[in-house]
Each structure stands twice: as structure tokens, then as C-alpha cells.
Length: 516
Image (cartoon, rainbow, N blue to C red):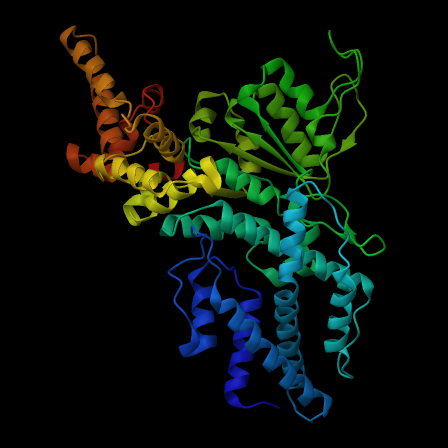
């Protein structure tokens, strides 16, 4: 069929088709394919300021087009080979990659149109089918029908959305951020893209996602990337997707709602179900479409009685409005987030273990800002520039960027940024208004209270150790560092630390996975 080098390249393209784009393996495949033509873009896929596209992608598209046409001509000649099925598999993978690269830009334009509140028809679908039919017009290949092309088009649209919202929404080139982006991709598509396109695309809404991490680490951005990236079928007659990814995203902050209203907001209620229910109400679960997601932010605040009803909705994919017995289907996906230690809440009896295990089949952990900057300090310039761009748009002043970076660097590498990216944003705002930033000295206040308690002999030995361990952990930023400073094993630090005190002092929360 083709020479050895072309065969090697086609095999690499086949691997590229199913690869998570946010892994180092993806970049290694690109480098192997392009050889000397490969341009190093850094360790991980991430957005840069100003926007910079990856030049390797265009080179890969050109190479794929050349290889696809060469293999097509060879197959048209009907050359006999004992490995025909293997060559056809290579050809199908190359066609997939080629078609996606050709229609990536129109799909991005559609994404931007939806974000702007528009819903234009996708007339390019006709050309998409024509291009696909051209490549599949081989005697050895069965011709896909219109439904097959519509499904493939929908998958391409989903891939483009997922890449856009993960790539643009989560900044930073540190290893923790690279791991986070790759993890979000798997939450959307699973680890097997081929299996996803065959069957999982209509099953992923059955699996809830739990996002854990300290306050200010971007859990809402992670949730939105997942919620904006659901599979949306394409209506060939209307030349439109059957729904909007924006309208299918239904976020609700449980901590901001009174406990008496949460159940009604989630599940809805019938008229007269309780005092004040003058009209029937459709809840979030009922309003959520099949391609959508309900985001339950601060799920650790959910009352036990509502936890039971949510668990049943997840188990049975059905629920009833408040005051009704009629079962209504829940067809969307649940994405939940919390900065609380749910395992500790289970011990305290305020969170149900069965709901916890139901939620954590798919779990994502957001890294702290301190963890990002410890691994890659230069990310702070990227983040500061992005925050100022978001605040000022095109009026961003480079001198303000430099002033903000100077202020941040003056705090030193030991500063732990307890408020994470949210605190960094307030730092930038403070520099813009006052030319400086004074971080809150929570740890000092905690030390003062500890000193006063010592003078008054108010603490037992265990309480004294717990408070001192907690303040040391807040200063050092990790169990290992605190253990080294205290001369204790990291597990002893984790066991003695007072998580409630840590949170009251505004020094963050203990991330569950770090206690192991």
C-alpha cells in the first residue's frame, strides 16, 4: 500500500484521534508525527495572553490530508493485501482527523454565536456530508447514512466546545493545572474516545461529578466546562443543534438559598404545596434537558432530608415535586462542588455516606494557587494579565500589569495565598485603586488568641497541640512541611489538625486527598 514511513505516520494519527489533548502523550505524538517541523509549545496545552494558536495543528492537518489522499488512491486501485482491514482502519482514522480539522473553525464560530445569544443554522453541514461521502466512496467501505453524519457532526461540536472551555477557561502551565485539564476531559468523554463515540455519548449523564478543593480555586469554572460540553444531537432538517449549551447549564448555589427553599428550587412544587406556593413551580432537575447539567455548588451545605431526595433522584433518575407523588424523569447530569471535607461531615453525621459515594464515582480536585506557583512561579504573570484583561478589556495598561506583578512578588514565595485565585484578583484590584495590597494576617490573629489562651491556662494538652499544629500547617502550607517544622510525621499532623479552626481563621480548608 504505502511506504514504511507513511504507515508509521498513519498509525500515529490513529492514536492521536483517541488521545486526550491535555496529556503529555498528545504532545509526544505530535512531535513524532512532525519530526523536525515540530515547534515546541511548552509542556502542556493552555491558553496564553495574548491568544496564541498552536502552529503544529495546521501542520498536522496538512500532513493528514496528504496521507489520506495517498491511501485513498491506493485503495481505489484495489491493491490486494492480506491486511485490508488494518488499512481501512487507518484510513477511517485519518478521515476523522481530516474532517475535524476542516470544520473546527465553523464549529468555533457557532460556539461564539451561542455565547452571544444567537442560533444561526449550520449550512456547512451539507458540505460536511459531501466531504465525508467523498472520502467514504470506496468499494471496501460501507456508506454512512445521514444519521451517522449527524452524530459525527455532534461529536465534533462537543469536542470543540470541551477544548474551548477547558483550554481558555483554566489558565496556567503548571503540572497541577495540566493534570486538572486532562481530568476534566475524561469527565466529559471518559478515557476512551472511541467507546464514547460508539455508546457512552448517551450514557455520561448517568454519572455525576464531584469537584473538591479549597475556596477560590475555580471549582465553578471546572463545573461550567463540564456543563457546557455535553453531547447535543444535530437536527439535520433544521440544520441546528437541538439545544443550547448555555441554556442547558443550570447552576444553583445551595449555600445562598434558605434551607426551606432548596427542596422547592431543586425539585419544584405544586400549587398550594405550602404557604406561599400560589403557583406551580418547575425545579432545576425538571428544567434540565438531556444535554444539560445541574450544578450544585456547596453541596456540603445540603440538609440531610434533601440529601435523601437527591440520592433517590440519582439512583432512580426520577423525582417528585414537593406536594406531589407523580414521578418525573431527570434526564440531565449532576455536577456538584464543595470546599468541605465530606468524609469528616459523614463522621459528624451531617452528610450521608450513600450520597457521598454516589457522587464521587467521578471526582476532580482543584489545585491551590500556592501549589501552582510552587511548581511554576512564572504562571503568576499569566494570571495577573488575564485578570486585568477581564477587568479592563482592551484598556488594560501594561504599567498596571507590572505594578501588580511587583506587588505580588514583593509578598515572597513563602506567601500561601489562602484565598487562592480569588484573593489574587482582589490583590490586582487593590493595586489598581491604591497602588498596594495588604494581605489579611489571619495567622497572626490566631497566634494572638493562642497566646492569650496559654496565659489564662484555658487549654488542655490535646487542645494546645491541635491549635499549634493548625497554625503551623497554615504557615507551612502542607502536611509534610508542617511535620518537618514540628518534628512530627505528616500523618500525625493530619490527625491533630483542627480543620474547623483553620476555616474560621480564613486560612483555607484541608483538602481531603492531602490528608492521606
